[in-house]
Amino acid sequence: MANGSHPLLGLLRSHHYLLTTSSSLSADALARTTPTASAKEEHQQLLDDTIRTAARVLQGLVEVLPVGHPIRAIHLSELGLLCATDETASNIPAPSLPTNEKVFPPAGAARLQLAIDYLVEARKELFIAFGAGNECGDGGKKVRETLIQLETEMGIWKQGVKTAWKEQVADRPRG
Image (cartoon, rainbow, N blue to C red; front, side, top):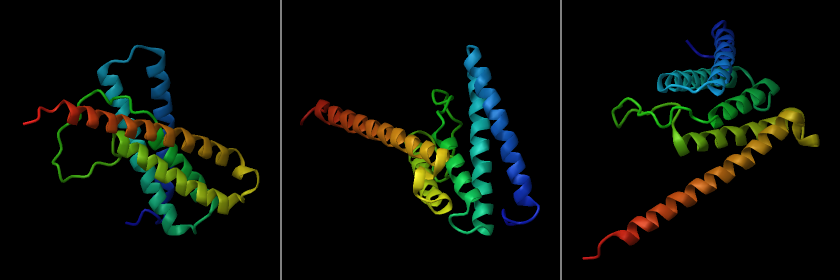
């Protein structure tokens, strides 16, 4: 069944809303206490489920709405912001998966790049939906600010990888 079909799209959007609310409540609970490893892992699983559901909703919206439709543009920005959310369980080892299996959403820098890609696309669609005047409103400003932060973070990450690589190559014994 296609994600854009009736009633699946509506049900997916409702499910996404419930997951987003639960994820927000879970993050608040983690912030108020000293989280255990299992609590972090549960929160991370909830966040990943929210992102997967949001991606399915996006697929459905793409099937039924034209480029630049306000609902589609806003959902793209929501999905980008979800992908940009910090991973709470990054220090917990993930279950081993076959190397040929693609995991969605990705982790680390790949997740950050995915967030940037979604937000760039969202910004384009926000301009179509709401016009270029006034930076597309508050949503457009939020997307722009987040993009600047993420691109800075990605630049720092890439620089750190380059530095570590150079140090590793310099420390190798020559023979």
